[in-house]
Length: 323
Image: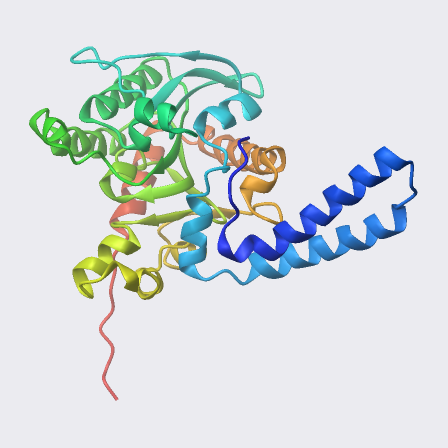
């Protein structure tokens, strides 16, 4: 994991981590016994992380979701799955590196995994287009979904994108049609599917691989129709109002669970997913195994009917008598 500056609200945490690192260096170099001091600092660090991450504002959770040290799709493929075989190309135009996918095994069971991939440095971000798929990325994803259906294997999608790429070339090659087709086809898939928002879930770019039987979110991920900055620029004519927008849009996992848009919030380790990749992957793997186990028991017709009912129930409203 690359070293990067901490987020503003992580500075106090970073200071204690530096103190711990300095103390360990002194102990190693000079042969000092600092067990008591280390124990005290580690307790302080744990309490500080717990306090900080328990009370994050919506816009701070957006920052955590975008954290450059947060694990990405390829990291989870390495930590949670085995025997991954990547499949490339949409068979129409080219391979889009911002979408990765292929066959893998989850606890020995074959599954199709598809996810959006960001980069960790400028070179990789240019290759991955900052995690913003072109239409050929979504067409590749659809090709893999249909392979999963053909071989009757469950589908797992990992969502992490600021949104679909809005460039002229992408529009000319049918970005809107590619997304719309994925929505339609995912709604009718004959195999179990679980989607997980692991970072940013931005607009139709996220939804294009998110129409699943179960939709899960990591605790500090976000899911919304537009970024808080974009919303603020439209409603308040200033991106500086992004904090107000994040609150109004209810972008956090807790908000979306309360609204029944998602099915489960997966807890992250104290300090966020970027502080401990292995613990995060373990929690995510447990959730996937549990949900896929339940979905595998359902006959195809019941599976599709339940999926249809799930999405038709979203956006329900009630009329109440004004007082």
